[in-house]
Length: 116
Image (cartoon, rainbow, N blue to C red):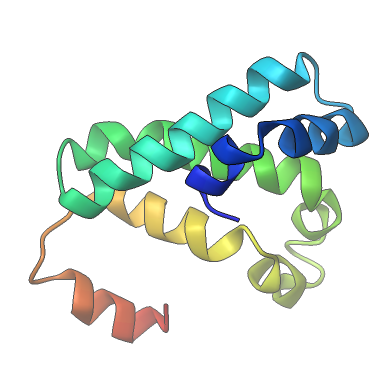
């Protein structure tokens, strides 16, 4: 589900956060959904890409730690599990945005190189 989908179904997101044991589930649901929706929109347009990449990357890192903790803890013993986890492509893209910005001529080459 996308950030817009999360905002449209905020109750489901909050219930999911309760099941994960995340504190203040409704507040965190609004916060993470807004960051995913509006932050990703800014990244797509190319506005403030490095600044916007920070909260989006943090959101993806928290998603990794809460939803796929087993994949994170096995990063060295079973790296395939870490790379195949759902948050990995998003975290990789946002980390790349943070590192190099959003140069429209460079992105297609990087996406082909990394297979994303």
